[in-house]
Length: 253
Ligand code: NDP
Ligand code: 8X3
Image 1 (cartoon, rainbow, N blue to C red):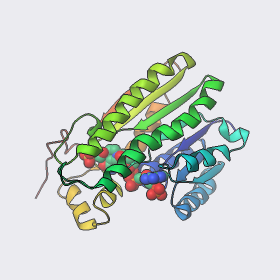
Image 2: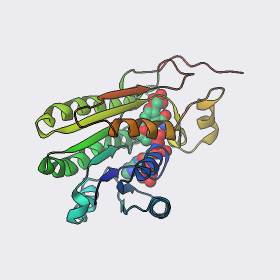
Image 3: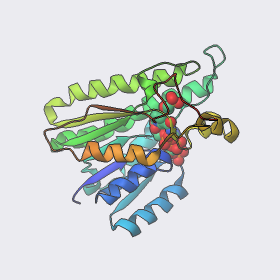
Image 4: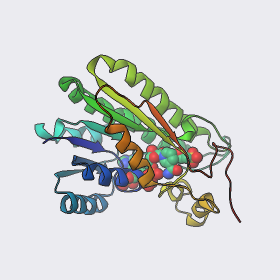
């Protein structure tokens, strides 16, 4: 295999768009998520459209043993991972701190922080062995600012920011690049998931403005991973034009 990328959370949104983008750049892909049918359907599309090799790994990234078993199942050639995109993640709920649900908090902490750490700890040794690799962590504007009712989601993305900085320091001597992308509002399944399937609440988030689309983030990742060997993009904060920061949006109508 010439070049290989692993993308977590490829069944939807940013992960799916990034899979399509990296396939168009000629990367063979390992795509992961819990929804097997979606992964298989995406794999079929990628193989047909781009003539690349694709492996699907179905596992819940919150469960260390499942993540470990999935990565252990890879043959040697599939362990030469050049790019790891740590994308799987979610917000669950948007409630004041005293009204948040434990189950939402645990889901976010277990996915956005612990899941990212589990998969990274498994893949990084392959990169160290080859003295090359590039990790792209998907953070958020929520990793830079804390907004009302964002409490625990913002905390998980602040943790992603700290982990990204820590990785960059610890992996410096191995020549491994570590980047992060921190988007504002991107219209994906994110808000439907956040509001536990309530699509009318999700629609309200994007009402009267043009948000970012998953493809905008995939384009950003393309830029990051196509820089020459001596250049690392540490972080890209990318917002819809209608969003100044976590607090100010401009809505029409
Ligand atoms: P989507 O809901 O569309 O996609 C989320 C992806 O994460 C899905 O593929 C899902 O796969 C995967 N995922 C979630 N939980 C798990 C789990 N327990 N195990 C394995 N995979 C899991 O949302 P986005 O594409 O918008 O989100 C991608 C990333 O971007 C997240 O980290 C999010 O925090 C971040 N982000 C999103 C923004 C937005 O406004 N949309 C803005 C800033 C950052 P499956 O359900 O099949 O397991
Ligand atoms: C998702 C963007 O503004 O909902 O990370 O936190 S926001």
